[in-house]
Image (cartoon, rainbow, N blue to C red; front, top):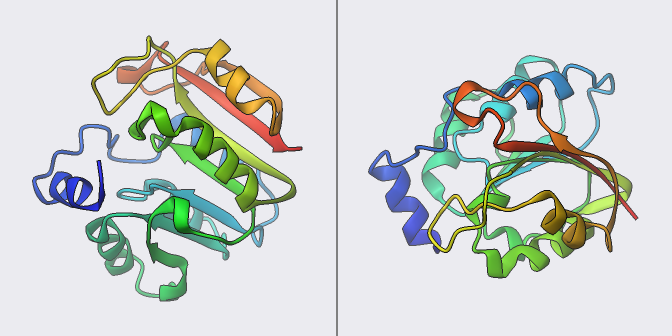
Length: 191
């Protein structure tokens, strides 16, 4: 699942994970944020519905990163008034900057389960002290085939707790219909 793999998925319109708009749990979390200048990262941004929503609601310091060029170019074309410096085509694991908030939306589940510990370490490294990782994690049995790859609350706790104080890790009550009872909402603060 390298750059070529993801480019082909976008070119062939094989984006079944894309909900078509921002999902309710992420939207409702963003609606509670008051500081429009916090530095936010959306990794594995795909079609960037969260980015669009943040920009439309006055957030001024939002970055997106994706290994595939196509979704980044699509987001740029939809948001011509946003500086190109906020759009990054790169491998997430090679990226190095600091953020106040990272929004997780179907990125973790798209990575090989072998990369999960590395993901958690990288998320920790990308956050400022007391920075937050917020988002959704799939709650269904881990599979060998994917993406998406599943996981469980106990697995996530074991992965995240060495690096984060978990404030919330519970069944999302407001998931979109296709993901109902299959998502956990996470709020984790960098230790």
